Structures are given as C-alpha cells and as structure tokens.
Length: 484
Image (cartoon, rainbow, N blue to C red; front, side, top):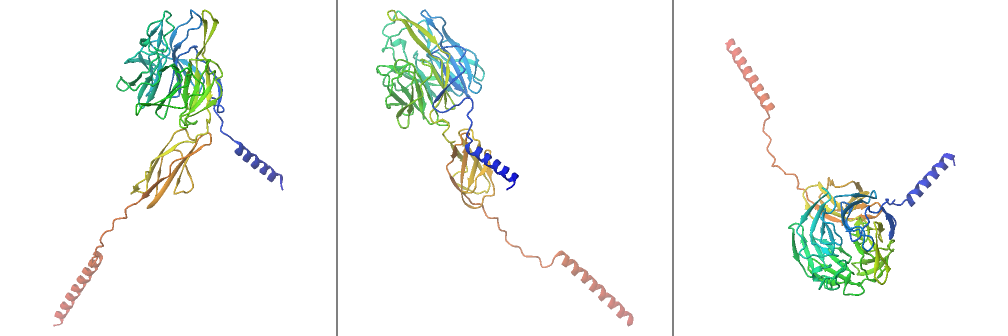
C-alpha cells in the first residue's frame, strides 16, 4: 500500500472519530444539569426585591437594602437593575417611583406590574406602578383594593392573581415596634384579580389556608402556592388554584417546610416541566426541592450554594437565577439584637434534564382536507431555535428547508407530510403526520367543429380555374365565328 493511501485512511479515521464524539457546546450561560454557577452580582445588595423577565432580560426592582445592627443603616429602595444573561452584566434603569419591598410583581405584554408592598416606618401600600422596559418609564394604575405585603403575583390568561399575604388591617392591634406585626391574625386569604386591559379589580375564591411570604409558580395555567407563613407549623402545604374553575385543591405535601424562599418553573422547552423551590432558613436549610405537577411527586436537586432568605427567582429559557436575599444573625439572645447582612448574590441553576427536550413542531398548513391545486403552502412552527429542519412527503427522503415553503407539483390522490427539527443539543422533534388529498379538475373539453368544405386557398384555385375556362370558351366562340 502506498504512503499516500495510508495517510488518506488515517485522515478518514480521524475525521470519523471527531464526528462520533462531537457533542453540543454549551454557551457561557449554561452548564451541566442540576448544577450551580456564580454569576455577576447586582450593584445594590438587597432582599425582598421583585424580579421579572422581559425579552430575555431580568429586571431586579426595589427591595430592602437596610443592613448592619439595629438601628439599621440604609433604607427601602426603588432601585431598578437590568441583567443581561448573555453578557453577564447589570445596568441601572429608571427606579421605581415608590420605594418598597415585599411587593407582588408580574409581567403582562412586556410590561412589569409592581403592586403593594412595605414602604418603611411601619407603613404599607396597595399602589400599582407599571414599568415599560421599552421606554424605561413608569405609570400609575388602579391600586390594589386591599393593602398587602409579602405576597406573589401570578399571570394566567391575561389576568394577574394576588393571593394571601400580610394584611395590616387584620391585625388586632399594632405593636409598638413598627418592624413587627401580629401573627396569624394579619395573614390574609384574599384572592384579588387585576385585569390590565380594563385596569379593574375583582375578587375570587380565597385560598383555603391563609398564608404569606410563600413561593409560588404557574404551570399549565394552574397556580401553585407552597409553604409560607400560615397556621401550619411545618409550612409544607401545597395549595393549587385553577383560575378557570375558580377552585382550590391540595397536592402532595412538600418534604421540607419552606418559608422565606423562592420558586421558579421550567416551561418544558429546554427542561422538563417542574417547579423548583429554593430555601435558606432554619426550617429546611439551603435545599432545592423539585415538584413534578403531572406526577404530583417531589424530588431534590443540588443545594443552593449561598445560604440566604427572602431572595427572588427569575427564569430565562428554562435556566433559573436566584438573586439577592439576606441573613439575620443574633448577637444577643436576651434582647434579640440582630445583624442584617444583605446579598447582591446572583447564582444560576441549570435544572434537572436540561438539554434533553426535543423541539415541538406543529404544522399549520397543509391541513387534513382536500385541495384542488397541486401547489400547497407548507407552514409550521417550532418552539425553540432549530439548527436543522426538513420535511418528508409521502414518507420519502427528507428534504432540508430553512423555514416555511411551498409544495409544488403534487399529483392527484392521497398524500402525507411530516416536519422535523433538530436543536443544538441534537434532540430531534417531529410533527404529527398530516394526511391530505389533491383533486385537480380535468381540462375542459370543447365540442368539435366541422371543417369547411373548401378552404380559402381551395376557393381561390376554383375561381382561377373558372376564369380560365370562361376565357377559353370565349376564345373558341370567337374563332368559330371568324371561320363562318
């Protein structure tokens, strides 16, 4: 065998080996599943803040920036910082007009609603301020009917639900220290609903067990409220609300009670649908508890690296970010002298099963019907970015495409089509196979017409012959007359 042939075989082997072991490369924002990564911290350390996601950016708004030993330094703030997960950088934006903490926050049509909260000095508010990231401006909307604090907001079908929380008006009497509040009398069971389209409020069925300072999330249009400060000592209740039927039910109890923690839900695009509950307190430690809403079952994930509480959780493309929080330590057990340590910490969690979900492909056209043309539009949607797409017509070989296209030259009869998409993790997704038929009308037949007996040319020839005959007859007659 020649040297050239040997070198060629070696190159082929190396190339094949590289193809066989090649795996998707994770971006800087992603790491292995069920693991934590430290990211850039906020500029301002704070707890009881609100976070919201608009167009892939995280907005960390408001919070309690007081710190040190009582009397604390600092204040309740309206700070607004935008976090870019792609560049791992924070940028200051227009601050919230009313500085506060422990308020409810929600996103509707790319606008952020900040409702209720604690404004300091023993005072609370039901104010409803709306932030537009596109214009970096704030507007006032109709306030919450019942002033509340330490509650969450959840959006379902265009409505914002604010459930439970601390209601200062329910307190039997105010305690001399404005930083304290009565319990459990001050815990609300209210379920008030805000409609951003009409800027109005309505009241729905209250939560069965009143709770506040709870984590919550939405999965498949159901609101999950788990743990929190309530009459249940273990703080392990799993209360599930269905806005469509305005009813409540209970799910499996949380393994470890959770207070002062946070939660976020994965959407099933890059990771399986789950709710992740993070905590950092004496009841459950810095644990990650994972709830499967379909199987109604709990598991555990990797522990939260930094033990803290009253932080906020944001979810971007099924990656979770745990931001801010504080730790309270006591220096004097007799007078309960305490020290507050605020965190600007931003820790990213890659959930269990991340990168294992295939793309979801849905065919819009053709439909399961009959078409009278051999040219039909192929239109479809994919729920995530795809590196490769194709279709198979009548179970033949796949044809690579870059998006919607047109099927041409289809023959009469039955047909079927399946569309495929592959994501950057090499997960292949396929649409439902669509069956359709083509019946093109036959060309219109015309009645045959009789051909003329003589064509124009024939008539011309006949005329010429006739003229010649007449002239000939005339000459014959003339010569005959001369002979006589």
